[in-house]
Length: 467
Ligand code: SF4
Image (spheres, rainbow, N blue to C red):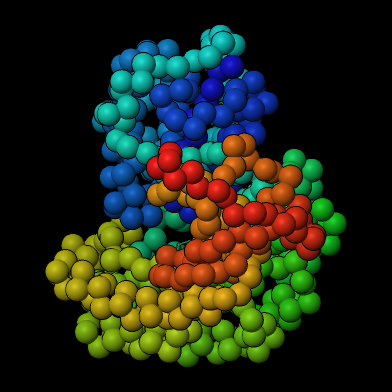
């Protein structure tokens, strides 16, 4: 069969779009490839949130030229935020790209896939493997057999908050909330297709307002949880401004909710928060988290932090360190500020950036403090048995499977699995070691559902003669 390779960079919005592309490709008659060199069509879903994401995307597009050179019938497609932002530039920099589709053009991409399908024969399609050395190594975010267990459902597109560092409102536009009926229909469709966990995604999901009725995000999650086939529900990303008591109360009444709240703080300094146009102070952030935790004490709070924002002083930075030192965050995604063309912060950066060396040094210090909190959170799982939804083989060690707990901790364990066991996707793992990246252990059971009884699993036998 003609195969399609889909690689996804960036946030869960892109994951959702890639699942949509995958669905359109499969219904057009493609099958999924796990390596670019096996595919007739290569799709790169790009991110532009930071400069290095942009560089990585251009690097990948460049590597794929080798596939196209080896077989000119191969099509290279780029979509996502970079495609939206850089259409003209990309055509000049990468003329081997056959199609550039913005984030609102997935329907057109689906039509193009359906039209291209007829160009490829049904027999196996493999380009000469010798090109592997110039492919730039393994990709990230590659569509695989376990992907369908997790479905990403977009609840809104765009964002109207215009944080001064962010490119999203410029490339994805202002808030555009989907009707609730449409979202629920998609959830039903995805659970019917095998999804166990539904992640509701949007740039600011908790600002969701149904256009016709005014129903809010708390109403939406209650409706999603009420669908019987849904096992688990997660959501990302949320804005502190829209975290209200109703959402905290409703989360506490819904046992299917994954106990993890991702709430971007960005900085612990009020002057920096004001300059970022974040619409809350540190005190308001902590107060809202406190209210949420009062209703949901077991939930993990995770966050995003920016280091070296233009004008950040040592005292501003220290406020961020102080917040992390309290251990409030089970995980933090930390970044050195990266200017994005067309944003106010890029202008401030050009006029007087925090020197790169200082920003890097602050990043290292903040990471050291936050890593202690992450490690402490993971350590608490030692000796316990966790149930986790399998992702697929560990990228670093193909003899291990990788899974995620419902509070989003990575769990790796040795497993001999000749073929994916999608009927028992929940692993029961005895946790034996913890580190900053996650935990390791032994799989002692596999279950068909999150609540279901696990079948006992024997530890894989290692053939010492074979190693
Ligand atoms: S809330 Fe701010 S950071 Fe988040 S998408 Fe909107 S503008 Fe960007």
